[in-house]
Image (cartoon, rainbow, N blue to C red; front, side, top):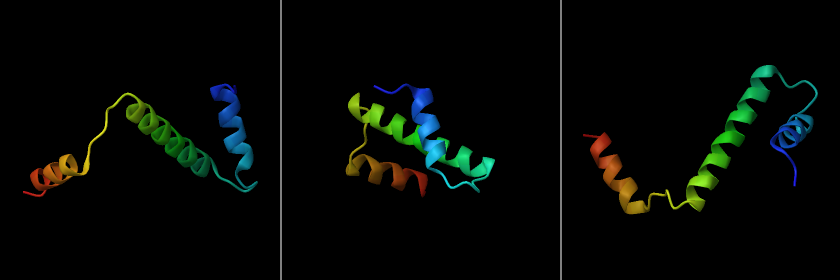
Length: 61
């Protein structure tokens, strides 16, 4: 199993050679959000469609 550091290094190596620091930061941010979402889902911290509709109605008032 790869370590977090190894996973990050692999992600960076997959980017084009002309990737900017901003590109790298963006990809790391997206990767972090995906991993958090997967962890939340695994732990049952999810919202179904009805929950999302209720939140949208509340926010759009």
